[in-house]
Amino acid sequence: MKVLVVGGGGREHALVWALKRSKDVKEVLCAPGNGGISRIAKIFPDIKSEDISGIKELAKKEKVDLVVVGPENPLALGIADELEKEKIPVFGPSKEASLLESSKVFSKTFMKKYDIPTADFRVFDDPVSAIKFVEEKGTPIVIKADGLAQGKGVYVAHTLESAGEAISEIMVKKKFGSSGNRIVIEEYLEGEELSYIAIISDEVIIPLLASQDHKRLNDNDTGPNTGGMGAYAPVPFVSEKLEKKIINKIFKRVLKGLKKEGIKYRGVLYAGLMIVRDEPFVLEFNVRFGDPETQPLMLLMKSELFPILYNSATGNLREEKIEWKEGSSMCVVMASQGYPGEYKKGLEINGLEEAEKEEDIVVFHAGTEFKNGKFYTAGGRVLGVTGTGKDLKETYEKTYSAVKKITWEGFHYRKDIGMRGLKFLS
Ligand code: AMP
Ligand code: GLY
Image 1: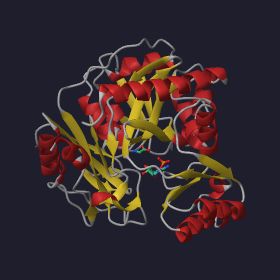
Image 2: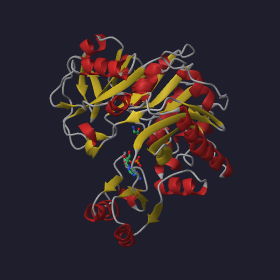
Image 3: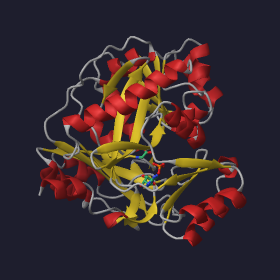
Image 4: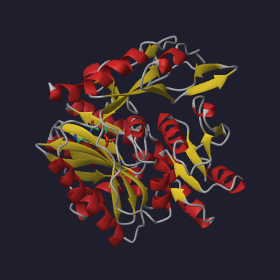
C-alpha cells in the first residue's frame, strides 16, 4: 500500500514514522513534509497542505491507496470531499463535519443541541453588545474567535479591560480576518485540561490513550498560548469511570448528533476537555490528530496504525482495543527563540545524532530543513524530542537527557512537561 500524508509538522513526522512500521505499507509520501520527514519518506516541499488541487493531482499521479490529512486547514477547505470525488480513500472528515473545529459557533450550537457538556455561552456579531454582555457577566470570562486562528483565537480574560481588548482585536482590528466576524463568549471553567483523541468511522469509536498538552510558552503555564510545547501520555488521573463518561456523554452524543444532521464522519475526533470535579466539559473539538500529543501516542502504540486509518477511511472499522506498550511517553517541543511571535530561520541544529543515540528516544521534526547533510531551523516549533520509559518519572529523565544534547542559536523549551502527572503521582 502507498500512503500520502498531508502536512509538515511534528505530528506528521510521527504519523509517517508509525505508518512506515505497518507491514502492509510499502511506501509513504508526504506533502509538503520537512527536513526530518525527508529522511524516511519522499517529500514534496512545493505542494503545501492548503493546495487542495496540488494534493489531489499528486495522489492521482502517484496512485496512492490512502491519504492521511494531518492539519485542520485542508480539511476545512474540503480536501476530503475533493478526494472522495476521485474515489481516493481519505482519512479525515468532510468540510461540513470539519465545522466542529473550523467554526466555534457551529460547534457550541451543536453541543447545546445534543446535550454535550460544555461551558455556557453566547454568540455575538457586533462588538458593542459583546462588551455590554461582558460588563454584565464580569470576569474571568473567555472570548473566542469563531473561525480558525492557528490556536491563537482564544482569550481568557481576567479583567474587563483585557476582555474589551480581546473583543476589539478580534472584531474591530480583525486580527484573524473573517474568522473574527463572530465571537463566542463563554463561562470560564476551572479544572484539569485533557486531550481525548479517538478514531471515528461512522458509528465506531476507537479511543486512544488520554494525553495532556502544555499550551503555554513557559514553565508553570505562564506566557502566551502556543500550538503546544509538549505532551505526555497516559495521564495518571484519568480513571476508567472518567473515560466512560467521556465516551458516553461526549463522543456517543456527537456521533448521534452527526447522524441526525446527516453528516458522515471518518477521521479523528479530538475533544479538548476541562475536567471539573471529575466531570468532563468540552472546550473545543478538533477534527484531526493533536500536535504534539500524536508524538508520544505513536511511540506508545503497539497496534499497527495503517489498518486502523485505512479501515476508518473505507468504512470498514470494527470496534477493537488498540494495544499499547507499558509505561509512559512524552514529547518536549524545542522552539525558536521568539516563537509564537517572530523568530529567525536557517540556524544550524547541533547534537541531533547524539540525542537519538540515547535509549528509547525519537526526535520528530517540525520546522526543519535538511540541506547538504545538515539540519537547519525552518519554523517556530522546530523539534519534538520524544521518549518512552517504564513510568512518567523515568520518561521525564530520559527525554530531558536527550533534549540537553541538542542546541542551536536561541532555542527554547519548557522544563516541566509532565509535571502535572508527576505531581498527581507523588
Ligand atoms: P481552545 O482553543 O478553545 O481549546 O482554547 C485554548 C485554551 O484556552 C484552552 O486550552 C484552555 O486553556 C483555555 N480555555 C478555553 N476555553 C476555556 C474555558 N471555557 N474556561 C477556561 N479556560 C478555557
Ligand atoms: N495540541 C493542541 C492541538 O493540536 O490543537
